Image 1 (cartoon, rainbow, N blue to C red):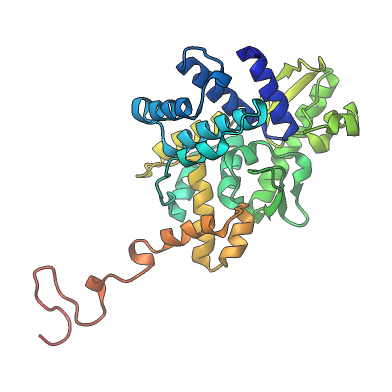
Image 2: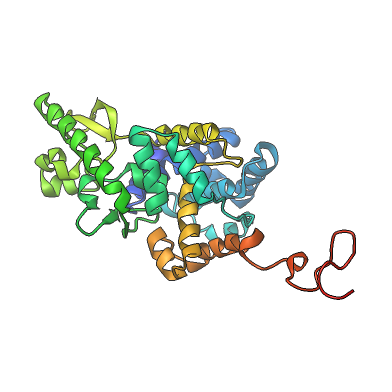
Amino acid sequence: MPAPQTLLMVLHDRIVAKHYSARTEEAYRHWVRRFIRHHGMRHPRELGPSDVQSFLTHLARDVAVSASTQNQALAALLFLYREVLRVPMSASMNHMHAKRPRRLPNVLAHGDVVRVLEQMHGMPRLMASLLFGSGLRLLECCCLRVKDLDFARRELRVRAGKGQKDRVTMLPAGLLPPLRAHLQAMMCRHERDLADGAGAVELPGALRVKLGASAARSWAWQWVFPAATTYLSRECEERRRHHVDPTVLQRAVKTAAGLARVNQRVSCHTLRHSFATHLLETGYDIRTVQELLGHSDVRTTMLYTHVLNRGGFGVRSPLDAPSGAVGLGGERVLGQG
């Protein structure tokens, strides 16, 4: 029976074979470790569905995790038993999914978005503008490469987005001049990196083998939003530059929202929600918005139609009826009493 550390190595191999993302591997490793620790370092092969259930109950009752976090833990354990241990117990564990609450997305008015962006500067402002102007997710924005921007067609290509799907979305006309200026500055930095013996970036999948080491130093493959510092790659002993860390933009958006005195919770994803809602308000059809957002199921996009039905933008309140309206005191304020 393999030791827990060997188990994690097999888990890594199976995740790589399935072409899951590095973030998925990080999450799955985390939950497998916690599951083993929760049961006194016993090997998962000695445990069964009841032990999985007790772990999920512990997460919900004692740790008070959200339903989505609980379901992520279950997905990790299902993968462990199905793909690593080859134990056929998925059917007996599928009923353990937690019911996720149906929440409406948080959306900002256009004026609030403008006020938030006005409090930002430099690279964070440009990135936040793309979240709102192109509907990008946070990590999609961080992972943009120079070759993904098509200025002539005013298009932006998202590579391997959520669910490993590619898609094309708009490149706002108002961002073309600042993006060109930003890329010019980044090109100068890249040339300095090359002169210093650095200038490489990590390439996805097996492209380093397919395209050669020189591709990692080419301008087309460089990050649009690179990190401020370089690092030494362990796998090939070359000096590389990673893309900017997502927390940089998260902190910048939170700080800007506070300075702008926006009276609601604002995150990077709020800007993406606002992109979708404003498009629907403008009259674009929901299928178009679905494609721009990269949603697999139109029902996910339909959530934004419920946002449109709130307040004065949707169904008219009977208190606001044009005729026969009744005042708050019970008197008839329009029409004949």
